[in-house]
Length: 389
Image (cartoon, rainbow, N blue to C red; front, side):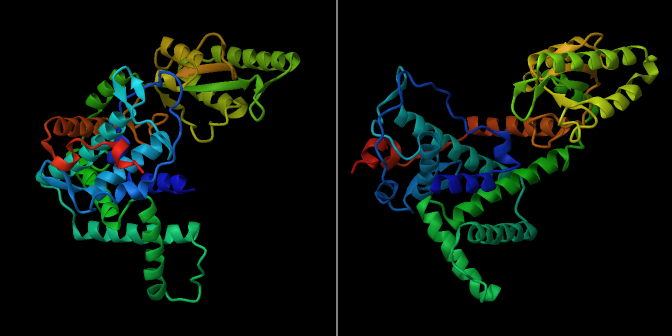
């Protein structure tokens, strides 16, 4: 339960803007043999080996203390390994241990946030009174959400003024178990807000300052495609079981009849007729959410669909049925436009993705040029010693 709630907290803290545009810089790896043998970690004892206010490192002039460093160590360990490991020298690669992996990636995330904070402020972006109110509102919402979902205390007989300090104390007690503080939550959300303000200053709230020409060039570079389709299923989507042969033959016949109707349409009438038949006959359960078609990259769709779409020109329809594991498709390729929302883009348009990409490039340059100094006590930090009982 603790790890699930921590994941929810992190999802709240690191949403939408900064974290949505960056990986944590974590190095990819595969275990050489088997997972290391398990040993339960005592995080509280490890945390207590340093004072929370002891300076761990300085990143671009921002001081990072043990409480923040340990939060990211804890988060990285529990995310990657859970709460059990007994061999910190276990090799992930020929010369790369679990210990190196955890420390390197915790510092990577620390560096990202603090470099972004330092450089965004240096660029002249700052928090307004309204932003500070947003931070306060977010904190109050975190308190109320925790109590609503996790608390067993009945506050119904109290006023808001009476109950809030008690609710807040409950959340803070829980935060101690995941090594998070109110101050750190404010810091993470501040970076998120500052990132959004930098993005808006550079490109506009919805990246409207970016031109169609540069956005479409980005779309082509990233390999975005767009298409509508009419799908005739050959399996039961609720059970993932194929239909029997007779049902599949019936579906294929209906698909062929539909294709013949479309092939007889005049070019200027094709899309209108396609839409009419799509809305009447398509069995794609995503149609209601994507009535204007899909924008996607090659790997977002099944290969048969992507290959068939890529082989068409915008405005062109497949002359034959396209068979995939889902069934028979009739595909009409569309022209990609700057404000389409690609699949797996969390609601961002292509134009907004370009803005995110450019901000990511800028922050990556800041990270590459960052000046980091690790305090002597932490330069040779050993997780084996830190968690030694």
